[in-house]
Image (cartoon, helix red, strand yellow):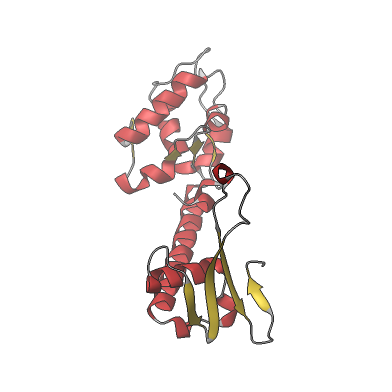
Length: 200
């Protein structure tokens, strides 16, 4: 999952804490299982939405989609509470209500990522189609790797500019056991004659 999508999700425990008197650890386990099963009570989860609902990591994250499943578990009486359930959960319900906005933002992010990938593919297919302002060390590295091969070094014209990928070796150490690895350096000279890319 793209980081830009994950950063629009909330930590799972903070979402669980939107339910008063909840036993947090069993609630997290129940939510994780509901996402894997794709359902919680009457709430159903499209298989394509599993990654968007819940991100399992050292700090688990939950989107409004996952929060909807959590609310379904609560309404179905499948969460352990320290006190009797309340009729309304305004904070959790408000987060669930942002699902449409979250989905719209995800669609925008995925479309931007797809456009970026398509542009990269077009530049790899025809390096002359790149614009000078699009050049970055990462782009040049990807084009050179795609055109010259993995681990290759050399020069090629991209965006009408000679672009270079070189290996800079460290000074020889007095102790051969302390040899450091070389470093890739990617650079080009722009239209004004200035060196761009990685520093010397």
